[in-house]
Each structure stands twice: as structure tokens, then as C-alpha cells.
Image (spheres, helix red, strand yellow):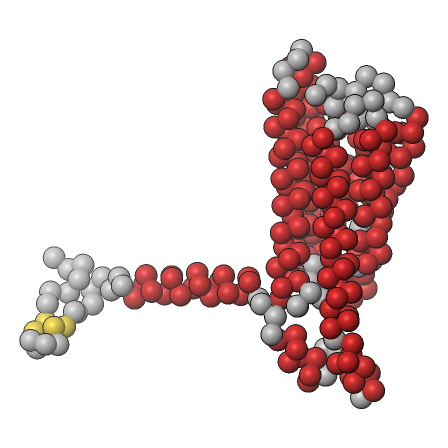
Length: 291
């Protein structure tokens, strides 16, 4: 692995198309969130991890001397994902707008400083032939960006394959951005396996989301038709609610499990100062915690 020495015209053109897509891909999602005043179904963890991934993503692209569009791409990606995450805080967690805005402003300033520092820390040794710092940064960005999708299957299981809260225009543009960026890497003089794999996985995961929703529509076509005939939406119809309720809420199960363990632990530890009675012998022991 070595920095790109020359960038073919085709790589710049394809990279520009991919960057334009990834510069605007979240705009439809942000507009949707603003209009509906809701981010239900949109994993806040995905938006946060995508925001954080922009830092090592950008540093890696600069150190690798990618074509200019692919260097600009992570900066725009980080900004838009941060705005969408802020909406998750405002609409989903009921944060005040100014509080979320101030938090984002501080985070962006910190991220800019960290990325600047990473570039100047890893580029000199990389130019001298030491690859591992750049590789480490690339792997980190790969893990953050792909790991962010973990919240998607959780939502799909909860809604039995239905995609809720995620704008399909956003998915389409995002898929195009990943695809053209992948083609840009293919057109370069040296293919970057790490980021090529990342772009390919993004395409595959987002395509699977669309397929999952289409399967849901096929499975619920009769329920949706009945609801429409009754002047109801799928979510308003009793049959639709019953069908949806059979989904697996992984997050709720996890927190219930954690809650049970916590309560069990508390019940095993009597509070200091309480009297422990020996019911069998009818005797009182010395209060716990009292000498």
C-alpha cells in the first residue's frame, strides 16, 4: 500500500459523482426529519458513529493522497451525519435545539482539530515507508462506518422487515455515492482494498434494506389493502398492529435482561441497618452495618 502518485481523469470524474452524491445524500433525510418532527426508526447510534467515522475517514483519504473529490467527501459526510444526529437528539430525546446545536458545534471543532493532528502525525512516517499508522486509521474508519449499520437489523427485526423513518431517496443517493466512489477507486492506478471493501459493503447493506422492505410489502399486501378499504393506514388497523407486534424488539429484551440482573443483585444485598430475622428460630440478629 502506497500513496497515489497520479490520478487518472476517470478516477476524478467518478470520484466527483460519488462525492456529489455523498454531499447531498442526507439532505432528503434531514428534510424528512424536520417536516415530520420525528426520527423514529432512524438509529441515532448510526448517525453518531457515521459522524465520528468522518474524522479517521478524512485523515486516511488525505494521507493516501486520494483524488480531491474523495478527500472532500468525508468532510461533507461528517457534517450532514452530525446534523441528522442532532435531529435525533431534538426529536427523539427531546433536547432543546440550542443545546444540541452547541454540542454539535463543539464536536465539529474537536473533530477538525483531531483530523488535522492525525494527518500530520501519520503522513510523515507513511512517506518514509511506515504503513501501519495509516492502516490503523483506515481500519478504525472502516469499523466505525460499517459498525454503524448494526442498528439497522435491530430496527428491521423489531418491525418484521419494515423500514421506518429512513428516507428511500436518501438510501438511493447514498448507494449511488458508495457505488461511484468504488468505481473511482477501481479507476485509480492502485486499488485501495480497505476502502473498496467498505464502499462495496455499504452498497450491499443498503440494497438489503430496500429488499427487506419490499418483502415486508409483499407479506402485508392483504392487510394493507383491507386497511385502505376501511379508510385506515397499516398502523391504524387492528390487524396491522397485531401483525407488527409480533416483531422481535432486541433492544427492549436487552434492557429488560439488564434490569432483571440489577434487581436480582439488589435483592441479594440487604441494606445496612436492617434487622435480619431468623424466622425458623424466632430470633433477631444484630442489624447489618451496626457494630
